[in-house]
Image 1 (cartoon, rainbow, N blue to C red):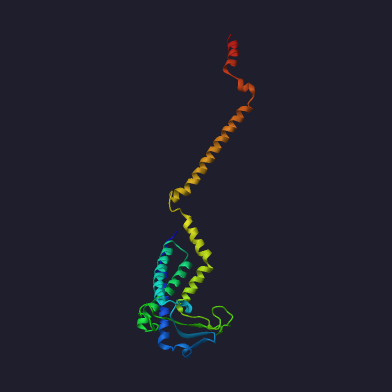
Image 2: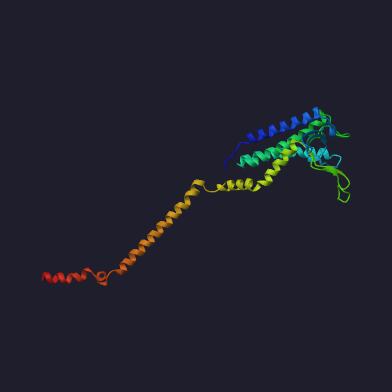
Length: 263
């Protein structure tokens, strides 16, 4: 496992946050809201369309009176959690693709946290009747992929009879969406590589060098024992194959003949 520095991934996060805020402020100061200030980028299906989003990503909202405040606080905790998780992944040597994806998600979370925390004060765009402009700022959305818009038929549950268009989002929402898609599409590669790297070396127990040497030593001992047993078996079989005269020859059978010659 090789630890990595999270610095370059936080640099990407800062660059994306700066881009997100620059686009939002440019739209706020140089575009008129709604259809009056709409700018066509690619035909009729890709446009810049300035709208204010009081809720979550892609225009979703919480209906409670303090829903916006709860959402802003949740975003703050999510931002801190994602940042901590990114550092933890880098120290554990996670794949770069997973770290880049987490950096993009963190950038999107921080970008929208800035809007909801400060825009109600500095841009004065908090919804009417908000208890405080702090943490009640509305997020600026501008990217409009106009695939379809119109009234939904009445027979459709929940949304029937309402006017609908594809969601309008911003750079921060795009960062979150792309980062999540990267993790979903490549999760086997990201988390599979991380699992392999974590299991390559033991975290506890014998020293890795000793662990790599011990099996070899045991193998040599087994080979030596097997060779010794083979030698013993061979020597025993050799003794069995000798003639009986040679096996029974003793100094006692030779001594009488030598005595006769002496006499």
